[in-house]
Image (tube, rainbow, N blue to C red; front, side, top):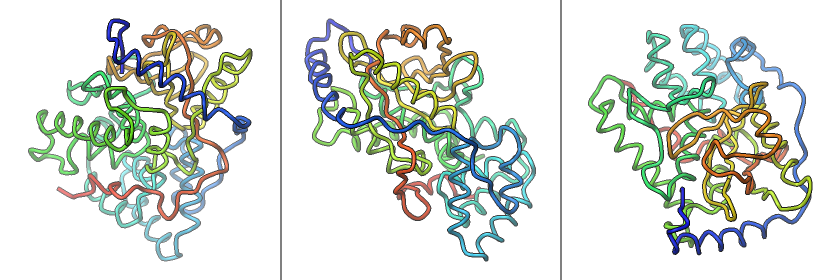
Length: 343
């Protein structure tokens, strides 16, 4: 959603977006969540305790979901995990944390059985936020397909980042080794998903204006990407300290493993990027226009300068609110089973 000053109709809509996005700002900001992740029992806990396997948010979600299972289902989940190769176990645990039921995890395990670490990483984790550079699948960029879908693409990438089953659907159609894995089918699927999300987030809002923050937050709350939290819009109001506090909350939630959409701009809001990770090197953002992971160093974060991402000013973030997870059952959206078909 990169708009130019010369594009008058979109600029007018951007001003409208600026006015409307400030309205939901009433109320105190959500509390910053700290502390270690919950302990997970069973073999799922064995997998979760391995360094780098699950984020704190995924571990919390996995523990909560396991507690809801019957004893038979818990045993079945542990059996599936224990029977998989170590390279695949983390992906299976992440898919469970994303809200997929045990039966889907078992089918997923059969689909990826015997695959190499490279195969697993390229198809189940195509978005790598550990180094800057292109985000792609077999040379095909994973980015927005027109000027209005940066928000939709951020939702898509957020889900693919935490849900390996959804990533498998995107990269292979859920049928690895078939024609569904071709470049043509992958690119068509990517565009169709972006448009589907765009349609669902722009109800009663002109699509030429991109995606409003409330549409993005509502869509995130219907996907397993929420990981038990509830996303809501927090504008970075032009009040001393507010933009710093909003960014600090976003970085804290990214530290826990929540993807955080960030709206940036100049005079008006213009473009969504996705904060995926934060460490001593800075903030690791997915930028949908260039389809790249961009590192914003600590100095720029301190100044709230996002020029490296295309626009300098922080307009607001869509934050997961701690302690307000209202997703029921497995927490997955109705179409979350995509990609579970076995070859």
